[in-house]
Picture: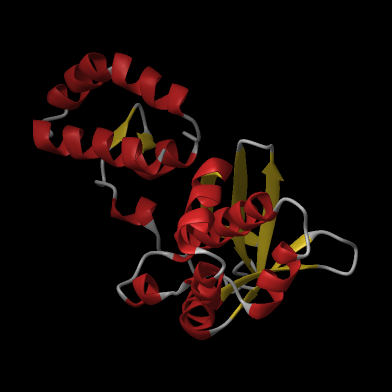
Amino acid sequence: MSAIGVGVDLVEVARVSAILNDKGSRVLERLLTPAERAYCESRPDVATHVAVRLAAKEAVYKALQGSQAARGIGWRDIEVTRAPDGRPDVSLSGSATARARELGVQRVLLSLTHTHLAAIAIAVLERKADTSGTQQQGPLSSLPKISIDGITAHELAKNICCPCGVVLLAERQSQLHARVGVAGIKTDCLLQFVDGLVRIS
């Protein structure tokens, strides 16, 4: 399996509590499925459990983004459930199902945590790894076809996975510029190269 989408979200419990006090339980009809609403209303701390589910829905929504149609995914198209072993799980319907099918999603991994102040959710979309030998197209494929010290932009980008890598690259930008200049490559190519790495990281 390979990860093809990641989403994270944080929801403040106090904000959810304020919405419930202002709008009443009817707001839950718009945000939650009947099963989610029944579970939350069965708990003594309703706002906390609603906040957890809203964070999870938003995290999954973010992971599914990338097309115009994906923007039409509604709150109730993403339902937070429980797996038989107690782990949080996700059930998709409507536009969310269509988008997941388009991406080839096989499984949605969901991690939830909360305090009395906030709820946090992280969602990861997985699909089967490509074993056909064909190269998956993605953001890396659009990087300029240049190399520095024999390392292509594509290869370098694949190995930069954290902000510190971007900082290191930024610190060496003038040095890279000198090497690229000697090679006769235009400055705008270098800027596209660096910008592409920053956006990917």
